[in-house]
Length: 510
Image (tube, rainbow, N blue to C red; front, side, top):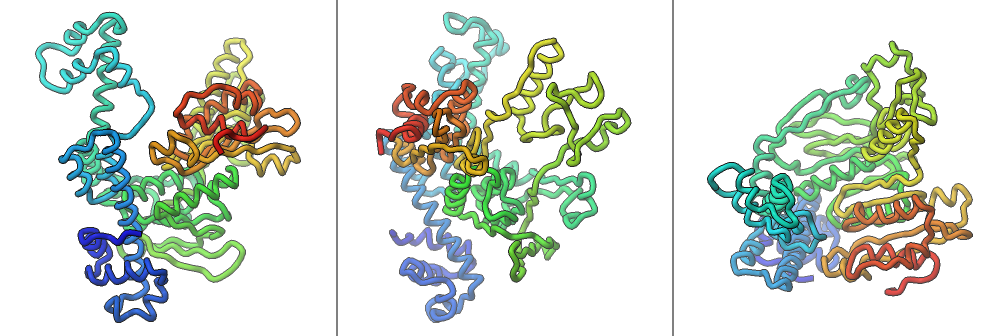
């Protein structure tokens, strides 16, 4: 482990509120294997008397800074290999004060899939986009008309292509990203509104209120380790907040594949997120400008209280059926307040149909979309249908988690014999080139028929790769079908092929 430079130590000391010499001494002792309690008790002469709380803050700051410096080195190396490292860019990367600013600089140089903007440039629409971003005489339509030819059939197509280029250009511009972040910091607001009975509950102080999003909270406590809690916690962690997740269950992402959840937690922990699992929140109270969160072990034990600058409660959702007049119409609800429907999406009232979050099933936009198509087909006299066994789910964190079909836990509970094939992204060429080697692909197939029953992915681009598995499963395909399908090289999707190979035989590149 390389020691931090003087400037890095100064930044750490400023963040932790201590002297540079103190930060340097603590960094040396931690690197030598000393623990915070040991340093607090037996090394006060070297730390200037820093207590356990200050040392913990300093430890977190040192970890975050090392991660920043490691990422800075990786970014420099990647851009240099591409032959795009100019003296100006190198200086900007070297002076980036935080991870957000560093990633803004690296964004235009990331290796990524071919985009609509790339296709538009290939059709010769780059000059049109540049003109639209500058000053030009006349209307956009008149200018676009001069680009109509060959692959650009009309003015609309020309403007749509130019729009894609403009959008990508602005999104990749570090200055634009910084300006958006500044605007959000200056004028952004966070709003919470009570729904139903919750307005009088234990979290009443945090509902029916709006407050400025003036800065990233120093310490954010997320109550709930499900999809929404982790997605929002991941965002705030990447913005610089210390994030602690308190979850009732013994695992995060309850209901997902256990192995995926376990490794995903390790990934988030490496990013600085902290987890208190098997913990039941018993109280949240205001404390100064922040709050205190009290929780106790589910299996019994002493209660613990932690301080937070902000608390995010993400303990589940419920259907929005209150106030719709359903009782007056005679529409029957189930025990959880969801609209009860039959196999054709019809409610208890003939001619009234229900789909989406107000009925049973996963609360996902794409599930609701499929149900909407099915209902339209049914009303038109056709056979509308939704295959609920093949609905992919994606956790939009960094990295992503995606799954479709059954988990290992579900197959074991049902007594289904299966084969499992797994392939790590660390053995995938594209992942290694992009420095995105964390995670794996897992394929679960019926032991007797080889039919794929579930696919689970954790890693970069998981939300895009999962649909290959969804298509396969929709048509009842086997792991061998998937494994014998040619995959382009180098791509992340090769890991899906290799995992399928592992399910019925063995992978090639392991």
